[in-house]
Length: 159
Image (cartoon, rainbow, N blue to C red; front, side, top):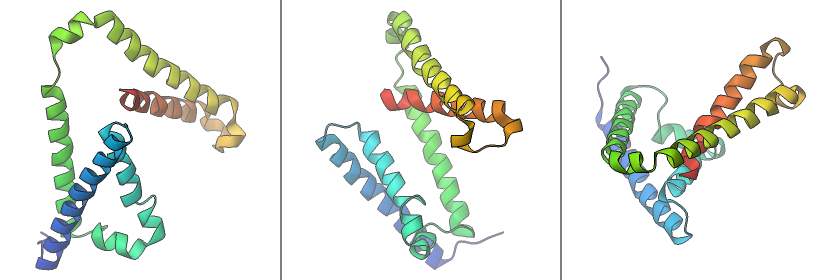
């Protein structure tokens, strides 16, 4: 069993503290330019994640976010707990009476905001195979995957 050493603990707590501080800063910046708070946090995730920081300076990125060891396991556990808490709080804020009052509108909006991106994503991959560069025998799989990815990611962005 892996033990979390003093150095690992300091890195873990510093990483979490840094994430929380920068998340708050980016959330406030998002509010100032009239964007949803979550958009500022998503931008921060892109900057602090492997997309930007990981490509610019991999050594410092892997120091703060280790790829293995006890600190990685602890960070994964804390991350999973944070996602569970986020979903729990989101569920607590659901008001069924409002949903029932707005039923038709909510269903129409939900379906169209998922069906249209699905169809567009599916069609894009299906009709432009050279652009997406996938194996010809996997056309349906790639088209379905891309369509579903577009459908499930479209609704949270617009709400």
